Length: 143
Ligand code: AMP
Image (cartoon, rainbow, N blue to C red; front, top):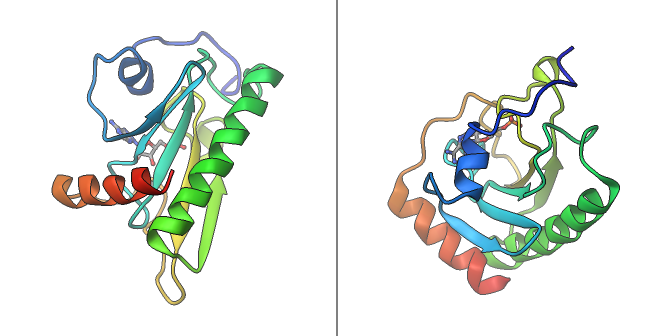
């Protein structure tokens, strides 16, 4: 079943949490880390990743889900302040048929501007690292 199974601690977000893989970090505390999506669907697309080793929302504890949502709200507010989008999409995919590609729970925060279509989920091209760092600096300054 795609929604339940063994947690693979070699997934890329587990490696980022352990500091074994790089990320453009926005914040980190005991329960979550947030960083820029490197295949962004829009400029400023970022992710909140709870540290609990859970594949998806169905497997995440209630406490971790609640704590994650506090951080999603804070990050959405910082994205709004920093980038002044016309809208912000908060989205989260559970299981491959739903579009999940990294099997460690994470929540997307995606700013949107009137008249600008999002790149497709999973179809974005890799971001320019200088631009990603500049966007991250703006978001961090607004946190
Ligand atoms: P999902 O389809 O919800 O599992 O989304 C996974 C997201 O992680 C996609 O938006 C990818 O662009 C993003 N992603 C994959 N690898 C990395 C990485 N190393 N650093 C940052 N974002 C990543």
